[in-house]
Each structure stands twice: as C-alpha cells, then as structure tokens.
Amino acid sequence: MKDLLDILVLGDGGREAAIVWKLRQSRRVSRIHCAPRPYFGATHAVGLDPFDFAEVANYVAVNGIDLVIPGNENIIAAGIADFLEPLGVKVIAPSRQCAALESSKEYAKEFMSRHAIPTARFMTVTTDWLDEGMNFLDSLKPPYVLKADGLAHGKGVILCHSLADAKDTLSDMLEGLFGEASSTVIIEEFIAGRECSVFLAVDGEDYIFLPTARDYKQLRDNNDAPNTAGMGAVSPVPYAGQEFLEKVEKRIVIPTLRGLKEEGLDYRGFLFLGVMELEGEPLLIEYNVRLGDPEAEVVLPRMKSDFVDLLEGIADRTLAVKRIVESDLACAAVVACAEGYPGPARTGDEITGLASIKDDCLIFPGAMKRDDEGRYITSGGRVITLASLAADIPEALTRVYECVDRISFQGKYVRADIGSGINNI
Ligand SMILES: Nc1ncnc2c1ncn2[C@@H]1O[C@H](COP(=O)(O)OP(=O)(O)O)[C@@H](O)[C@H]1O
Ligand SMILES: [Mg+2]
Image 1 (cartoon, rainbow, N blue to C red):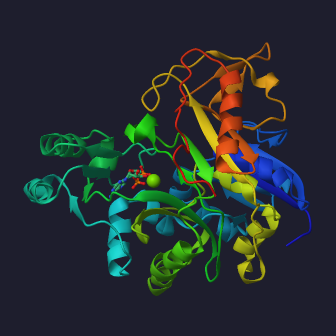
Image 2: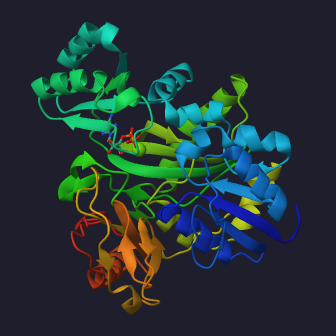
C-alpha cells in the first residue's frame, strides 16, 4: 500500500467519530472522507448515501480513495465488501455471508454449535414451533433471554423475569414485535456472568487482539432493562486478564477462525466477541462483524500504535507482521441520550455546554447537527459520547462524568453507574 492513504469512513454515530479521530492521529493519512456527514474536519462526502454502493464506488473512483471503513453492521450486512472488492477497492469489513455471524443470531448459534464453541444452551423458534418453544421455556430457570434473530439496532434482546412474561414476549416477538427481525426467535439460557467485549483484527489468516472493553447495554442503572445499543463503556476490563484471554483465544478465537476456513469463508475486518466470564471461564454470547459503539470510543483511544498500519494489515493480509501497542491508561465513555431512547427519541433540542469541555474530554458526536445559526441540535437518540483517558478507571470515570454534567439539552438522559463496581486495574 501507499505511504499516505485517502480513507472513506461510512456511518454517522459516535463510533465513526472515534474512527475518524483515531485516523487523524495517523502519520499515514492523506485525506479523511466521511459520509453521510463530516467529523473533525474530515472531507464531507456530500449527499453520499452509504447504502447506495454504486454511488460509493463512484465516489471512491473520483476521489482516489484507498480504503473504505464501514462502521455499522447494516452497511456490512447489505454486502458492501462484496460490491466494492471486485472493483479493486479495499474494504475493512467482511463479506455479506460472513456478516451473517451478526445479522442472524440463529446462524451464529448454529456456527458455534458446529465448531464446539462454548455458548449458552438455546432453541430456535418460529411460529410453527411455538409449542416446542414454550416447552423449552418451561425447562429453563428464570430469568429468560429472548432474542430476535435479525438485526434490531441492539434492541432485539429481551430479558424476562417470569415464565408468564417470557411466554407472552415470545408470542409478541413472533407476531412481529421487531418486524421481520423477530419472525425467528432464539430462546437462551441465562448466564449470570460478567460481560467482556473482545475485539480482533482479522486478515483471513492471522489476528490481533485489540484492548478489551466492558459496555453497558441496559438503559437504566443496575443493568435494568430495556436494552440499548450501549450507554457507556470502560477499557481495559480488570477481570479479563492474560489468563482469561488465553482461554478466550483457545476456546473461541481459534475454533471460530478455523471454522470459518473449514466452511470456505474468508473473514477480513474487525471481529467482536461478546464474551461472558463465568467463574473464570469464557462463554460466547454473540459475534459482531465490526467495532462496537460505544466500545470503539474507549478501545481506539487506548491504542498507541498507528491505526492505518493495522487497517493495512487487515486489507493486505499482513497482520502477521503488525502489532498493537496498548496504552497503560484506562478509558471510560458515557453516552448522553435523548428522552425516549431506545424508543422514538425527542429531537430538535439545543445542546449547550460543549465549548466548556475543550480538552478535558474526548467528544464523539452522534445524533446531533448544527443549525443555520451554528447551534448544536439533537437529531436522534444517541446524541453524544464523551470519553476520558486517565491513570485508572475510577479517575477516568470521575473526569468523564464531570464533563457530561457540563452538557445540557432538554430531556438529556445519562446512566449514572457506568463502570461502577468494576475492580480497579
Ligand atoms: N444468555 C445470556 N445470558 C445473560 N445475558 C445475556 C444473554 N444473552 C444476551 N444477554 C444480555 O443481552 C445483551 C444483548 O444480547 P446480544 O446477544 O449481545 O444481542 P445484541 O447485542 O444484538 O442486542 C448482552 O450484552 C447481555 O447483556
Ligand atoms: Mg451484543
């Protein structure tokens, strides 16, 4: 690859903001382009719809783009790599078929079973198998985990505390609670463990671990429902030390990559493992085929090495000669959401206080825009993510919450207990 690259980032959340922020520190970037909107002075691909792959291909050709990074799962599952790679464009994402590891929970669970990867016991249910599903629920102990098979913006998993509620919810989901995404439902045994997000860079042959993270999925304090796409995160994860990660590698990473190969799948891109630590042992909850949001906002700031070198390793299958230098600092991120999130969120409110933050925190804008008068206005549910690097997790949390307090908008909602109780490093 060339020394200096032109890079196009697709997607418009806090994660993509973190990707652009990290790219800007690289000594190997010529220009950064961004669609559908700009971050941190990146060149804005005006009017470019990330889902219109022909338009993306045209933009890439006209602007001499060397590398495309799709941030979110929907673009990847729609097959952007399959479309662009035959045209000679390098894409940091797996194929549509590989993306089924995330876009179908049934496919993912069957894949785990085929390759003896430790995971929660489960049953796949459609309307034709409702009775079997009810019987399986009868055989489990509360709480009950019900998952929509398809992509549902991180909101398709429901935890039910009573059997009656689980049965009602199963029926509701099959009847279209999440539309087509829940026409198939996975019922899972509940694992009372501690979660850990493990990210890998994968080039089809070799892989590199990125820093670990813990994200907080539930909307309310004390991990109370409903699930969201993530309310905050910390890195590293104190209970996922070297010994634990070696188990993850042996029992999950190696069988996963071997399984992909055996099935003729060439996986390149980022791979996320949603791992549950139970009495020191790892169980795999799910795969994602990209960086997480808000995990990217804590993982990328903790990588001291050059991001483009890593991306090049993925694209050119040279990860064997790359390595990541992890910072000794800890990072904590908190997402400020709009009222109503994860349902339809209140929008159009002015956001104040951003200017007072300056360099005290990293600011990763999400669902916000500038109006004609230059004011910042909310435009969706996940408004903004703030992140702080500090000597340890408690210090990073103190700093990030101090900055979050300086931001205001009508209906602002923040989880107050991100990272609390997590052992210090
Ligand atoms: N078997 C399980 N036992 C306990 N908690 C679970 C289980 N499966 C999922 N969860 C919880 O639900 C969250 C979302 O589930 P996940 O499978 O990661 O779906 P998604 O991220 O697509 O919404 C997890 O992060 C975890 O908190
Ligand atoms: Mg998940």
